[in-house]
Image 1 (cartoon, one colour):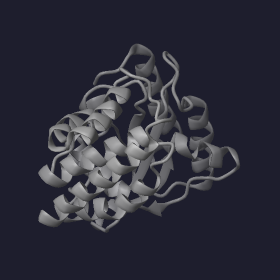
Image 2: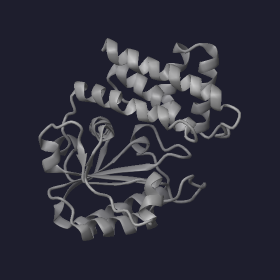
Image 3: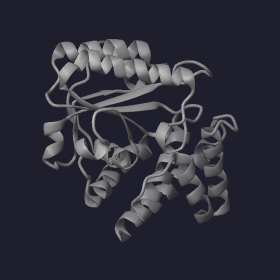
Image 4: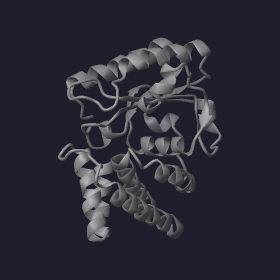
Length: 261
């Protein structure tokens, strides 16, 4: 695990919150994402996943939400300030059936802060993205509480992983504007996963994809990679059209890799 001391404290505080609110229903809690796969980058979230043995009550949902709004840093994260938190809670019974897409019992993420501050409460929902989260977590997550990750998280079939990528691709492409860096790097990572069946960090996926692209696209993806690493400003003001063209090309690469797999 590659985190700074103040980030360790943020993780401990979030774990303590989960234990306090969920009590004996909490079967396991896991750290996944950048913190365990390659180190947190300047704007990386801290990703936590929990598994419970019963659905959350309304009061538990509200208590988790109110405290996560306090513990999570706002986006974009300032240097030395609390990180953005992404916390996903799954119910063991929902994971046992092998259904697609997977259902999450509760999700907190900073992109939802506005809705939460307006009074929305997280409810159970199915989303292809959850299948990808579990597939990646099963390969990389480390246990903060409870058994090894493979004992609670199911093995997501490669067919479901590939279907999930097909299903999330249109929404990812439509959300490019204003989120160029993240979308381009996520597309590169999907291309890598569709081609290899493995999960890597966004910057590692970009490094794999760059030599497979023509020069103008390769330069733009390298800009996204360097912005992710904090090496250049994350500014797309004069690059929006080129980013759109790159996103379309990467989307085609993902689709072609999924067809050939």
